[in-house]
Structure formats: C-alpha cells, structure tokens
Image (cartoon, rainbow, N blue to C red; front, side, top):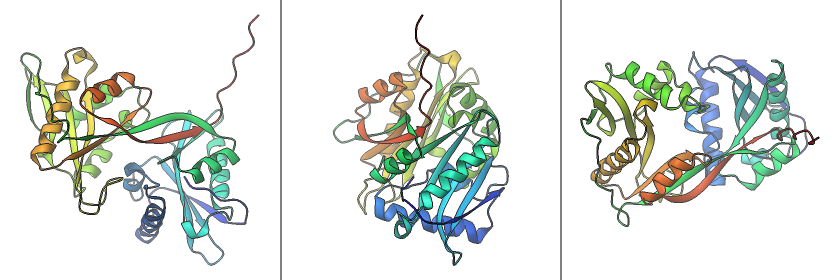
Length: 324
C-alpha cells in the first residue's frame, strides 16, 4: 500500500480476470514500485489472481486523464465478513490522490455487503503506507513477520520424525486433493492459507519455481499427516537479497490437527532447511503471523530471526462497553 494526498483520479472496478494487456500493466506497475520502495507492494497471491477465472476478487484500476494506469488494488471478496485488499500506486503519481481514491472505492465495494469490514495489507510497513492508512482512519490490526536464517551460522538440526512416519516428495497429479484437505485442516483459522483452492494449487505448480522434490509429505500407514513446501527465489528476487544471491524459503509447513504434539512441525522444518542447504543455499526466509507465538518460537529455535514485518490495517476495534 502506498500513499498520496489530493487530486482527481478515475477508478473503475472489474470483477473476474483481467485481460492480458491490463494484467501486464499491473505487473509493470508492481515492478516499478518495488524498485523504488525496496519491497514488493503486492504479494504472490494477488499476482496469481490477476488472470485467474475462479479468483474471488474485484480489481480496482486507477487511471489518469490520458488512460495511463497509475494505481491498482485487488479486493479479496471470498468471505461475507471481510474484504482483504492490497494496493499500489506508481511512484511518479504519488501524493496526487490515487491511494485515497482507491481506498474510497474499496470502502464502497466492501459496504455492498452489510457488516463486511475492509482490511489492507502494507508490505514492508513503509512510511507512505502508514500515511495512507492513517488518512483513511485505519489502524494496525495484524502483523506478518518475515524471518531469516543463515544456514552457515545455524546448520539445520537433525530431523527427528515420530515413530512410523516416513517422508516422500509430492507427486503432481496424485497428491493435490489429499494435501489440500490436510492444509485446510492445518490452517482452518488462517484467513488466507486455509482457503487455498485446487486452482490456487495448480497455479503454483505452473510457476517456474515449483519443484516437487522440495515439497515433502509426511505419512504414517499411508495417511498424510503434514508437509513442508520449499521455494527457491532466483538471484536478486527475494527481499533484501543481493543481485547474485538465490534465497530459499520455507513456503508452507502444515500439520494435521490430529498429529499435533508429535514434534512433526520441527522435524518438517528441519527437513525443509536441509533440502535447501543441499541445494547450495545459505539464506532461508519464511513468513509467519506474529500472533502465532508457538510457530515463532519453533523458528527461533531453528536459528531464524525477525527480518521485516508486513502489517494489515483495518478499522479500529470497537471499544468494550464500560463496566457496570
């Protein structure tokens, strides 16, 4: 999310996938903003949803008088209780009312369903985003931590799998539905990860970075208990990475609730780190909610430290009624 002040901007709303030309313009806008701010303004999911027919989104396109795309917002309208948004304004068009116009239209779209609330992600928690959120009356309601580990300083621990548990690579075309069922159970209370659809999974399998050898499934007696999914960012593409440095990521670690308490999360994390180390990577990152203190402590024991934070802005929580 980026900030600006006052001027007229035309904002249109598009439901359904964007045409290829418009999607390319959004990607270019995203790249231009990332180059200036040092952090990508849109996360992976909105970029994948630009042209996805099944995506539960509304696209907001902010154009100047000559039709140039100067701002973009994507609204996740997949639930009836809240709308989650991500937005970006071109660096050359900031402080001209673009972010204010996008946020105003996002509020209108949100209000189309009574009782629905708007929240907006700001990646990197940059000052411009704080200014835009403050002007719209939004406050920080959630934090997403980016954590990092240097595998030379903190080599992966030995993976201690529970008795009877074996690990194998994901098999495309065979394991999708079983994995998605366990993932939904593992992240039942997670507002994004727990809603991953078959289309979302297929989209990631089609990405250049997808490697089934780094997508490990833990089973016992043929039943899937959990998984660790890793990702490799090419040189220069990961946050804070040097132009010649490839960076690994613990992309998703999920454990079925029925298998909690076995130490499987720690073991899977260790296996993922070992896989990335064996790929020749030194730095590994991951993302986790700041409120998930159990996961944060698990990653800290593995050597991860906090590197950055993304914040979600939303309406201020309603004050509790006075006692008595």
